[in-house]
Amino acid sequence: MPPRSIALRMLLASLAVAVVAIGTVAYAAGQFTNQGFQAYVQTGTTQYANRVAQSLADYYASNGSWQGVDNLLPALARPFDERLVVADTKGTVVADSAQTGVGRPASQLGLGDATPVLVDGKEVGQYYLPSGSGGRGPGMMGGAGRMGQTGPRATTTSVSGQAAGPTPEDLFQTTVTRGLWLGAGAAALLAVTLSLLLTRQIVRPLNALAAGARRLASGDLGHRVPISSTEEVGAVATAFNAMAASLEQDEQARRALLADIAHELRTPLTIIEGTADGILDGVLEPNPEQVGIIKEEADLLAKLVADLRDLSLAEAGQIKLERSPQDLGELVGKAVRGFEPTAQQKGVALSFASQPGLRPANVDATRLVQALGNLIGNALRHTPAGGSVSVRVGPDPVASGRYLISVADTGEGIAPADLEHIFERFYRADKSRSRRSGGTGLGLAIARQMVEAHGGRVWAESVPGKGSTFYIGLPVG
Image 1: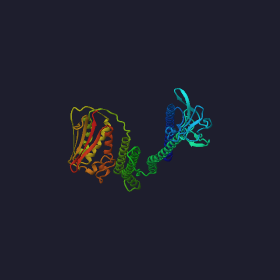
Image 2: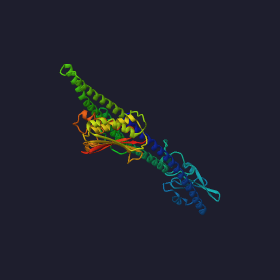
Image 3: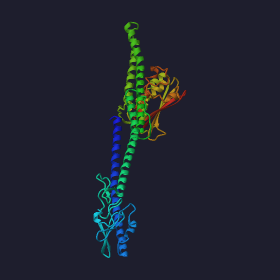
Image 4: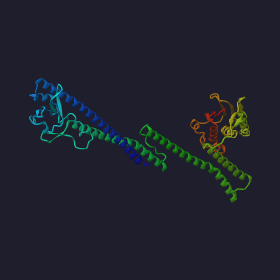
C-alpha cells in the first residue's frame, strides 16, 4: 500500500473516531443536562407554587378578603417577569401582576389551570401561574423547548393572544445545546488538526524509507535515510541504514573477492598459456622441465580452487563436521610430523609438545588438521633458515573447559596495522611475496572458518622482528 494511502486511511480513521466520540459525548451530555434541568425546574416550580399558595392563604386568613392583595404580588412574583394572577371564588380576577386582567373573568384570559387557595380546608380563591417569560404553572412542565427538539419552541402568550417569545428555560437549554455542539465542532477541528500533524510526522519518515528503498534497489547502496527520532519509526530508519550499510559492505566484499580471484588466477593461467604456446610454436622444447612448469601452475590452480570452495562452504555455513572423540595431543602431533620434511628442507627447527592426560575433544579430525596445517605452513613460510617453529597443546590457562593450541615462530613478525586483517581473504602482510612463497592468501581465512565451525576461535599475537604466535581455542566437549 502506498504511503499516501496509509496517510489518508490514518486521517480518516482518526477523524471518524474523533467525530463519533465527540458526537456521542455531546449527545449524552445534552440529554443528561436536559433531564437534570427539567427536574430542577420542576422542583423549583413546585416549591414556588407551594410558597405562593401558602402566602396567599396567610394573606386571606389575616385580612378576611382579597382586598389589597395586589400589593403582595410584586413580592411573590419571580424575578424573570413571572405573571401571577389571583381570582376569587367566582372566578373574577382580583389581582394581576401584569395589571391587565383585574375585574375580568379568569376564564377569558387563557391563563391555563387554576390552583385553589385553601384556608382551614375551605377554598377561598384561585391563583394562576400561566407560561410567563421564564416559568410554567403547576402541571405544565414538559412540552416544547427540550434540547435537540426540532419542532416549534414553546412561547408565552400575552393577554392579547400574541406570541411573547421562548421561556427562560428554553433559552437556557438552547444555549447549552449550542455550546455543546460548538464545543464538539471545535474539538473535532482540533482532532483533525492534530491527526494531520501526527500523520505527517509518521508518514514523512515512511516516505523517506520508501524513497531510500527505491534508491537501494536502483544500486545506490551508499544512500542513508535521515533519523528524526528514537521511537519506533526512528528504530525502523536505524535498522534500514544498518541494512544498507551491510548490503554496501557485502557488495564491496563481493567485488573485492571477484577482483582477488581474477588476480590470483591470472598469473598461473598466464604461465600455463605462455609455456603451452611456446611449445606449440617451437620456441620451447617439450621437455620434462617445461611440462613440469605447466604441472606446477596447474597444481597451484587446483589448490586455489579447492581453497575457494572450502572457504565459500564454510562462510555459507554448509561445512558438515563429522565429529568424534579425538586425542588432541596425538592429532596435532600427527599434523606436525607431516611438516617435518618441509622444515628440514628450509633449515627450520620444528618442535611439538603436548600436556599428558588431556580429555578427548569432540572434533572433526580432518577439518581441524586442515586448519592447523594452514597455520603451521604459514609459520614455516615466514620463518627464515635457522629459526624455529614450536607447536603446543594444553588446557587454556584463561578459559576453563577449553583447550589451547599455539603455533609460535621466530619469523619477521606482523605489523600492528596488518595484524587485524591477516584472517581476511587474499590478504598478505608482505605485498611483495609471490604466490609460490606466500600461498594463495586463503589459508588463514580457511583456518578461521574451520575453527569457528567447531565453536572455537583463532587469533594471533606478534612482535615485529621477533616472530608471531597463532592460537586456536577449542571447547573440550
